[in-house]
Length: 436
Ligand code: ADP
Ligand code: MG
Image (cartoon, rainbow, N blue to C red; front, side):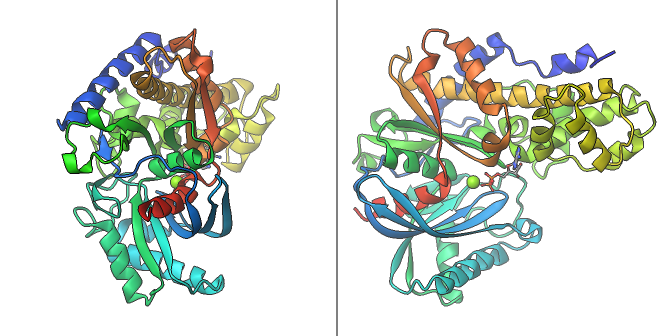
């Protein structure tokens, strides 16, 4: 017994597939920068690399797909970032799906409480980190193109989100805050790393969603009007979660059908935290129904139980001989009896799904870095933020394995750094840059 081979085959993402993805991805980068319609965003950020000399106290709001954070940040002017105060809250579920007005009112209200609690009365510039695809036309404004990560809050798509925030601040009587920058979380993560060390080359998010950004030579950005070519480079928000040239299997399709926007965000649904747990659950449920798993009789309890991406990390972290951690997990779910083979199958499915996710991410990183530097001759720093990368025990190592396969001679030049508080502090840096 063991895991049926056909299941395993579904989730293989081998070297030829990674190479093909790199070719397709680079083709779309190129065409997207010309202004052609491609499956990724390739959106201009109207921000370039920070100098590291930006200085002062700034506020940041970080709206992810799951969490919302407020930060009070001091930039030293000599590449040091200090988070002086911060507040984090899980976004209430009803705000993900209610009226956009309530979402913005919640944001403004939370900021107002934060300011009063920390006694911040003087005028502050604020960077709004908004982790969704935005078409920017200036550093401090931009229009939401579509929600991702299964948000559906009404009345926001097609609107200027900075303006919605300004209005909500006004309505909540917040007068000492100026919204001076709007950035994506991946751009903010890049800014935060680049402020500390000048050599960052990419920002990467692996959290509720997934995305990447990199600084592009402005001469290569065909769609940019000349008046915006004031910097030699501009950070491009790839919105790689939309990348669609990937072969989906039957399980991917079933997952997709139950999302709020079927057919969209192909890569994100194969890679990011919002979806991986659900994908594993679909595979496991099928095995239970086919009597390949939990034949001991507790299959129904498993079918009825929730399964989260966090559970994948927990299961894959169990390296004990008897898989006793997996057993504990199953007991919590009401599966009181499992065989060692059952537990191995469970762990194997988690590994298959998350390994494919890591290898797709690695191919994306490889595509972006090798566009900048075809032979990867120089050292490259990839700044990463997001709880999936931070907490999954093997996500990072598996990405590095995949990059070694892709670039045997030069993958040692790629370094991943965890940008602690990256997406939040980057918002403060964006606000600081906007004033220079
Ligand atoms: P956001 O995406 O809102 O900015 P995070 O970066 O904290 O927030 O990501 C939260 C998501 O990361 C969760 O929704 C979940 O999918 C995933 N996640 C959280 N904890 C873990 C974990 N232990 N292992 C794997 N994934 C996790
Ligand atoms: Mg985030």
